[in-house]
Amino acid sequence: MKILVTVKRVEDYESKIKVKPDNSWIVTEGVNYRANPFDEIAVEEALRLRDTNAPSEVIAVSIGTAAASAEIRSALAMGADRGILVKQDGFVDSDAVARLLVKVIEKEKPDLVLMGKQAVDVDDNVVGQLLAEYLGYGQATFASKQESLESPEEKAKKPGLKLGADKKTLQVVREVDGGVETLELTLPALVTVDLRLNIPRYASLPNIMKAKKKPIEELAPAALGVEVTAKVKVVRVEAPKARAAGVKVPDVPTLVKKLHEEAKAV
Amino acid sequence: MATILVIAEQAHGQLKKATLSAVTAARQLAVKNGGQVCGLVIGPGAGKSAQELAGFVASAYSVEGAGFESALAETHGAAAAEVAKKIGATDLVIAATAYGKDLAPRIAAKLQAGVASDILEVVSGNQFKRAMWAGNAIATVEVTTPVKVISVRATEFKAAEKAASAGKVEALTVAAPAAKTKFVGFTEVKSTRPELTEASVVVSGGRGTKGDFKPIEALADVLNAAVGASRAVVDAGWQPNDMQVGQTGKVVAPKLYIAAGISGAIQHLAGMKGSKTIVAINKDAEAPIFQVADYGLVADLFKALPELTEELKKLK
Image 1 (cartoon, helix red, strand yellow):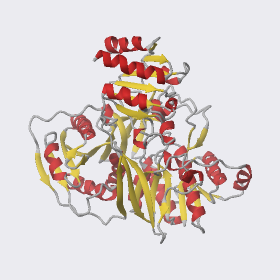
Image 2 (tube, chains in turn yellow, brown):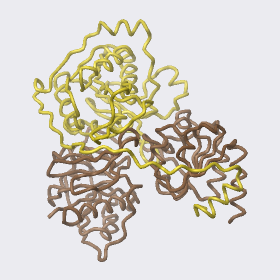
Image 3 (cartoon, one colour):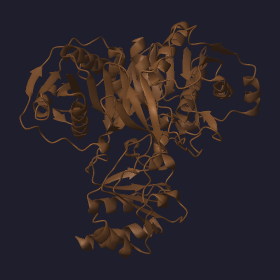
Image 4 (cartoon, rainbow over the protein chains, first blue to last red):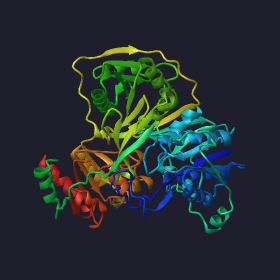
């Protein structure tokens, strides 16, 4: 089984995000970068599927500047077999990302494409679905599983996505409004993963060393025949409205009095 | 003239409330671009829901029948794109629910349209505000394509009122594409409480509950509130997934939000900052939740919540 998984380089969610004074973007100096946490869950799931369905291969793909090879390297350190970096500077909108990935997928012909449901920088939640439509694949967004993240299944590192006996289908449990839904996808297919599919592993030191020798292929959008134009442009970025500072109340009766008389909330 | 098509969401012949927020956003767009708002319902019971939808739009279309039984993005997306072409829609608007998020980009890809997702505000005919970096920045995005697809954060738009006169209703026939996806089953999380994203009061519990939601439930009973949870609680399997409030869970904006035993990670704040009044109850006086709370009480939730429940009972 061949699994292609995406890894986006994003601002660390623990870094303080500040808007640039000219409102063009956020301040990137002094910000730490890491792999999109949802993509790490996708990588983990890809590895579990690979290791329970030998022979299989996991390819980690990123679209970004040369610096994004660090995030591919971290996927390789987790255990992915090889990497592909589509090198592109500056903002790439979700549609262009999907169109670039189409070309990589046409070249690699994976059985399964796994990606995070959204990247925690632009929080778009769009690329996977665009990609599935462009490829004519079935899709399952928000992949999860019914067991909790503290279950024996999770401790045994079993995949949450269930490959059919004939290896032609994949059962996916997904988080939807009001409950969980189970879909069966015909492979090749696309799955975007939610938070509770698994707990991603940490890369061990020997694996970090091994990852340094794994190949990362570099591709240019022009060589893939894709023109990187945006269907959706970011024209302005501003700080959110701050909430006015509140007060601390000493006890419950005071809280109820304030809620009743001041806020008129009860 | 623009034709704005609202893709409605329904279950068993009844519209979801979030769809009425999408109608409001569509009407705002109609004011900016000129033109009229139409609607489309897909799936079993669509004909019945279209009757209801016609109260809000100029024309309500329905597509149902073989191939559209399950709400698959493949088939429902194809139907939406087909109808959009048929009526010459310039803008498609959908609520950013699980259904809407699953569907909107698939429609966009079929129509070569740009997608503005989970918007907070209609700035102009092609510019929209949306949250990025867990709500730490608000971006204005511009959709440059002739046809636009917009998904709408329902809590940011009031539910639409009925139009002065009801629109026409029309059932359309669309051939369903052969889906590569099969619906297997749905496990409903049953609750007698109001829906999280629609409730006017939400009581949420975090790690501080240690999994014991009884005091949260008792308070929610008195307030007729929905119950929410932080990510830690859901990850631990203490409460079901669909109760999570935050960047990656539900975004809520009730009149009153009570956070008990929730530290207030930025990802949680992203899901509730828009609430009118926020109350935080936490043992840790330094918890970040107090920075967004209108009223903060430093206390053990197991003592404070039962007391609060009793005080509120007295008030009623």
